[in-house]
Image (spheres, rainbow, N blue to C red):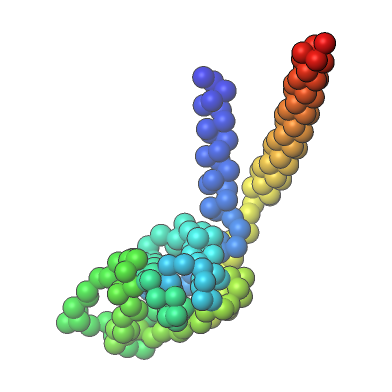
Length: 204
């Protein structure tokens, strides 16, 4: 039981480390008010980069910027555009309390499109269709001015330890696979030998 608990704690540490660091781990400027992504449900039609950004980069952005709404609108139309809209606070325009804020939420029906900016907001758009996720992230960092998060020296050591552990695990799995294959081959050879011996006896 102790071993199981320890393995669970290690997996939790790995998940947290993967969330804290890697592509997309960045702190957004204070004038970024929200992010909206719009792309299709499936990969085909040029939506692979957008989907990968959503799955791999956006969780890290959300981890470091939990107060910023990040809406993901996915829809069934594979021919539709894939676009990200980033909203910024325009400090030259005062915020009005008369504007009714109608919240929108992430969806998979494709209807929750990026809303028009509020009077005190400005936006930038990032085209994601047929664009690799690395290029999407690079453009996002450039246009938003987000600052990538660098791991501390201790976290660097922890990440190296995790990588070494992953390599050791992969090696152990490969050794186990080869051992099972050898065992299966041996069992097959023994079965064939028994079958041939039985055939000889029956022939006599």
